[in-house]
Image (cartoon, rainbow, N blue to C red; front, side):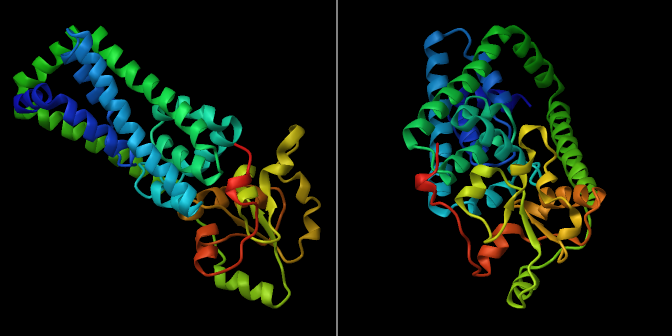
Length: 321
């Protein structure tokens, strides 16, 4: 364990840069604890703390700008790819869409405090056409708040952090084993929660080919897009209805679909997240509300587009920031 502490002392800035860059690129490797520890070790020098902040902010901005450009270039397809390396891949897109749809670029001020949110929010900013200057302003402020809070906490509690490091160093290999076990338990808990969610939402799906065949036969189920309206405006399956449009003014989200009897060909619900979790959640709700023949679209919007099917919507470049 001592060698790890010595490594942080010797190459702290380089480790922080790589850790922040990798985390903001989407890998589940928390950088905040390393920032706190490095801030504690550098707490005796304001100049060193300043450079530490600059290094970490630059690393975060590099990753965020890359995701922004990817979102602008590849659209919604990049969102699912980010979530596949997230600790909570089934929920991160939906949660980020909801927050960004409500607050826009201002949500970047707190994005880095929510695991998995920052990289998705950066890509989403590019997808919906948020101006680069606006994105860069709020993202830089958000990075400064995130890094600054960690560095401040580290310097403020430097004595406590140092005592903890001394205890772990004294434990030697057992201290390293303790940290490894704690991280493994954290990952296992996330995995178990994900599996429980997937099992709870298990239900029959409809494939893209099956849906396309129904359209070709003139049998058109009602299509429900459960993503945020800001993404619905950018691109959606032709003829689809925005799920959240019916939730305004205190109405239930499915109010616009009533009465249920008028959907004689059933309902197909789609999202753009791994395992169709958002779509399956809404499908379950619709079934409980009395709608019959409700099916999530397997693979969601990405699968529909990958199959060469048509999309419609407003180009991201002209959407509201």
